[in-house]
Image 1 (cartoon, rainbow, N blue to C red):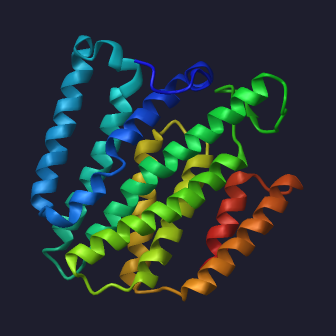
Image 2: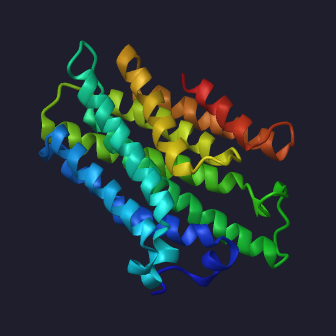
Length: 265
């Protein structure tokens, strides 16, 4: 079954599975406001057990094995399960981990990361053809860190995380301002882009959901936000400076995104 362009599988065999994983889970947040947290915990726990079983019995996947990448799927499901467990436990105390944040995490980790993967694979394909010799070739993985993929993840993540947050808050009838939802989406997307750009042996389906989820919850719990117009100005200005710094070779992608994260605060 060939669902993706050939250049994706040719340049990064892992990307095909990541994109299929993203397509499977990208709109699961639509169901979050209509299902109790304890039921969602059971659903994701059952999925985790099922994917674990498929890993032990790979013959059941047959041709789907290379696309689904069972281990990364387990990592993503486990990360979202952990966030639901945190929300469930904190609900018993004086703290609150809102469901809309988990919905935003899902949007960033699927649609945002999937879009970044497409852009990165396209740029890698162009690089391998000798048309665009970008800098940043990683010797250990023979892959390229492109600022284009990080910016794509940032922009797409903000858009869809905001939509996910608006959807969940609207149907839950929660008393949360749209300004707060957008601000949290910006923080989460920048954090996710930072984790996506840092070379690591940790699966990105663990680091991105948990890292962005904790950062978003931190700012939400403090009740800190700024007006939307100021957020957009700070974001665009910080991204512009970070982009210039990257191409002036005075900062790498992670440094540029770190500066952007500081700038919007």
